[in-house]
Image (cartoon, rainbow, N blue to C red):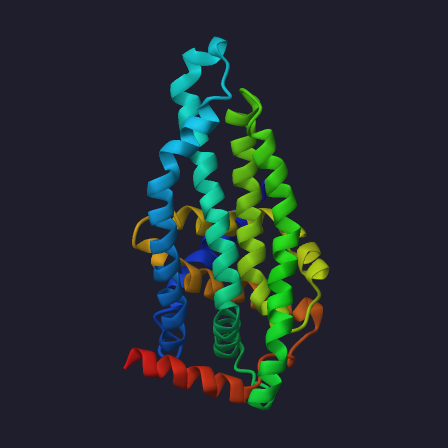
Length: 271
């Protein structure tokens, strides 16, 4: 059941993400995710344009003749399924490539919101942490991919695949967007993946609202170029207000020397 207060919170944190990316001290950490976004979206857009007609024909071929009177509606729903498929590819790739930068951005936002000093550490500590970050992305992939494969196969069933399944797939994609971008703050504090899922499930309406807004913005040209850092910032604010104190975790975040190293890299890009 939808909680009206959590729907409002979802909009609040999403809008807060837009506000935070403009703040002095954070803008340089937004540059790298945006550049990665541009490269990935350009490649996927080319793939989408070259393959969309063939994929639509393939999906429509499963619709029996007695449902031909619904062809226009089913065509729209089929395109929606294909868009979500490309969206998942984009999210998975950006998650692996941009994970260190998104984790850094989440750490900087949390520090700005709480004023809490980061634990000192060496660049070697960060390098040792990269396999753990990538393993975390792999956990997200292994959690979502089997479910999306099942939904895709169900989408091939006449009528069911062009009516109910796109709705379920859209809701699941919104849920995965909440997991994807909220997880950077949880992971910075070494909160296990299954604990993070359980915590987000306690505020499911909030999570789905926030994730749905992120998902929607990825389909809007130009807006989709900046939505990832916006989502990271908004999700970090959500973590600070709703989960941080409850979990009693305060200090286990990225090393300061790592922040300096990636900060210098981002500064060079800006120059």
